[in-house]
Image (cartoon, rainbow, N blue to C red; front, side, top):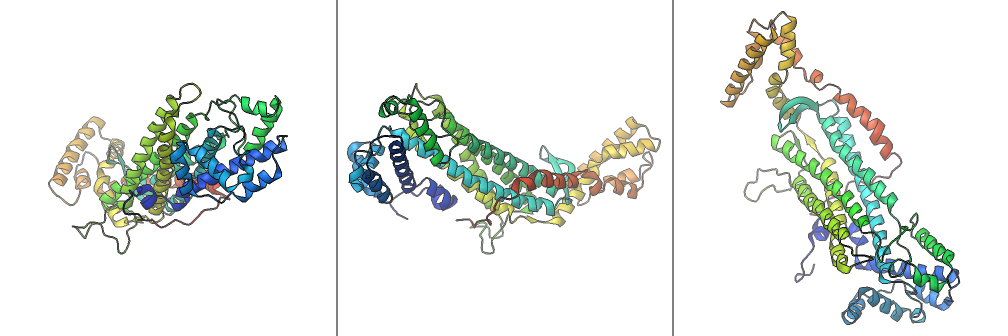
Amino acid sequence: MRESRYPHPLIDRYASDEMADIFAPGTQARIWRDLWIALAEEERRLGVDIPDRALHAMRTARERIDLDRVAEIERELRHDVMAHVHHFGEVAPEARGHIHLGATSTFVSDNAGLVQHRDALRLLRERLRGAIGDLAAFAREHAAHSTLGYTHLQPAQPTTVGKRACVWIQDLVHDLEQVEATLEGLRFRGARGTTGTEATFLALFDGDGEKVDELNRRLAERFEFAGCYHVVGQTYPRKVDHGALATLAGIGISAARFGHDIRLLQSFGEVEEPFGSRQIGSSAMPYKRNPMRSERICALARHLCVLELDTSWTASVQWFERTLDDSANRRIALPEGYLAADAVLLLARNVASGLVVHPAVIRRRLRHALPFLVTEDILLAGVESGGDRQELHERVRVHALASRARLDEGADDNDFFSRIATDDAFGLRRDDLERLADPERLVGRSPQQVERYLEEVVEPLLAGAARRPAEELRV
């Protein structure tokens, strides 16, 4: 690491080298050269006079990229694409007159950007499948493990640990579907000329529009795209960038929701994220086990979600056929979006694959709240025993408030059932009340919902897809 240069945290601390490599200058330079080589080869096949020696020189020099030399040329020309064109000509002099023939700068910059979108989305698809798979294993293990449910962050009807995990999984499944849809919708810009009219290529092929179409069909096929966008200006539609970042923001939303829940559960002592044997929770309080990974998920997801707004502004201010105020912006927003999404999914999987459940704490917290959660059942049972519902409702209210006040004053046990059992108006014994408060009864169909969701949705979604092992965090 150079001490005199700011290290980008997404690259140096959080995202994977694999994602960073997709947006690395060397990777981009190679894609640009692949585009120039493909353009020249297909132009030659369609009748343009490009000699074999030029094509051979371009292929031979593909890997001879000196980014320092490119930077030197760019300082003189003030044009990044032309700096690369000149450098390619230096290392492949026999091809100088045929490199970039008929093309404008966005032939390489935009088509390469679409390749980067595609490759980065494919990597995120793998990341999502990994996180979903790990959470699915956790959900199946704890499908019937009853736990206190919450609405408004207040105790509510019990659910199960596995059912709650399926809520997290469902969000990620939606994200996986959005990634697939975004990938399916990607198209190539192709060779379309300065304002997208294809005039330059029409002239190159002596007015033969079918050859222009064939050139673009072949280029799209070579770079694994289903076709080209029907109409473009100088650039591909910038709404494509916004759509991709909206998909990534969706990943941020899901990951943050998962991270927030783990942070709350860890504060309750019910479920914890992994904690290393040598990990330090606090420099001042050595006993602490802070949810550092989940906090990092939430922090990076916040940045990721904000980047969607960035691309929405860019897409909205593209004047006529093109304006260059998207260029500097996209150099930052697009790579950072993918790097941040990569980072939060690496973290989410790391947490999901090592979650620690504390059953004793869950039982204690559930037992503490359960008596208040069956008041409607108590009323129904009391009415069946011959009581008046309105009178019983008032008695329940009085007993519940008295028990709550006792708990607020520091009592360890909830005496609500004892109060009801000694109130003859209800006609209920203590064991009757305990049966009403059986967690297995109160969680409803949660275990069955978990099994059905995993079998009908998650397993088919992951079937046949290779899954990598969870990666170790970089920092």
